[in-house]
Amino acid sequence: MTQPLPKILPVNELKNTANIMKTCKESPVPIVITKNGYGEAVMMSVKLYEEMFAKMQTAALINAGLEEAESGAAPMDGKEFFDSMRSKYGK
Image (cartoon, rainbow, N blue to C red; front, top):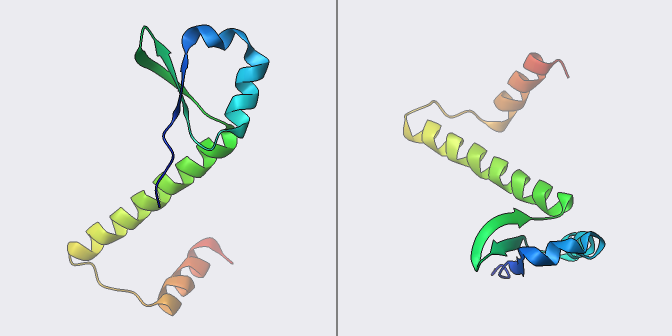
């Protein structure tokens, strides 16, 4: 699945804040703000930020699990895992 390229806006277009906020909210990708042709900042909607952050957290957890497995950690089956979580967190 390919991701669309980020939108690019020059910094002088930030004067119209209502339009910029609308663009951020509607954009499925981050908006790169440029100054003199170079990237200076990135803007995105809260929804997009939360989605990206959740993906990064998921990737970090998967990588941590893979590193644990590669270092020789004993495997745990699903029932054992959920039982340990219930006892740890009381639910």
